[in-house]
Image 1 (tube, rainbow, N blue to C red):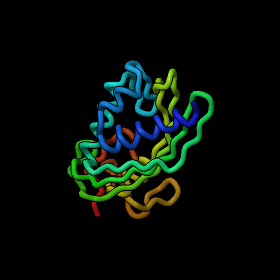
Image 2: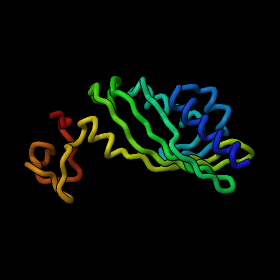
Image 3: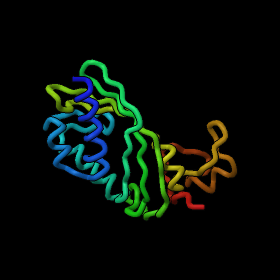
Image 4: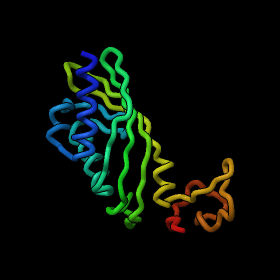
Length: 166
């Protein structure tokens, strides 16, 4: 059973996410699945997340590096990579390549995913795409904060008025 769950999780990521095959996601996930990682409920909401990711990174590649199975859960260590040709978070496309490490944990019931959660290196992705400044010292930017933040001195309620692009 453990080997079957790991193989199912691998298919979910490599074919569903990597190849963008919605039929795979529909077959593997129950309709009312909970996606703790993205804060949504339902297979359609998960697919919307995958479709958005693939719109930003049309050449998205997902490689499953390692998996651990215990009872009804599978932990998958992935590498995701792709070129930002679609624009992240409604920003203009950077045409830069990103590669991040991801760890997802999926809980299964009767061979299908009922819960998805995990951690992804979003900070690393944002740095690689030059959405955030590349160099930080402790909790402070190196260089002038004014050049990155509209409030100048780190007002957490202020919005970024421009995207860092070297």
